[in-house]
Image (cartoon, rainbow, N blue to C red; front, side, top):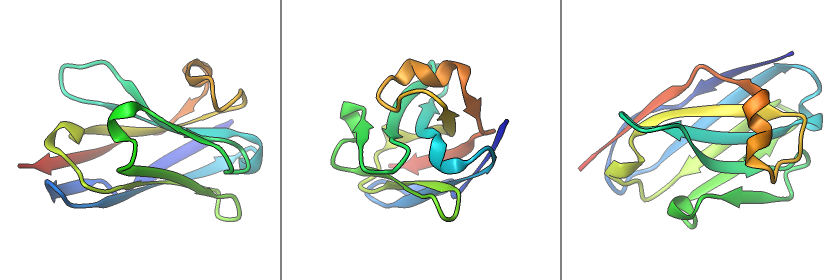
Length: 124
């Protein structure tokens, strides 16, 4: 079992920055892939970013490339999402997820572990 707790959400103006964190407990953190997803009001939950077990490889959805950075600190059992140049369309509940599968397969998180989510609101 893996328990995930997100933090760092809030209200920010367009163009601003936020850093989300996700603390994991349970199974060995370095053995699991980690990802971030988001769900905007009235929309389905969608993929944002994913990172490999060691942290050397990452993937992003096109809309956040160049603005968001996913990273992890395996010594602290934590994954981060640094969000810069935020836009109103980034407003959503952000979820972190963990999987024992390959980080590059987004569907691997479907049967993984999920946090409770943290709200990010970007005002125009």
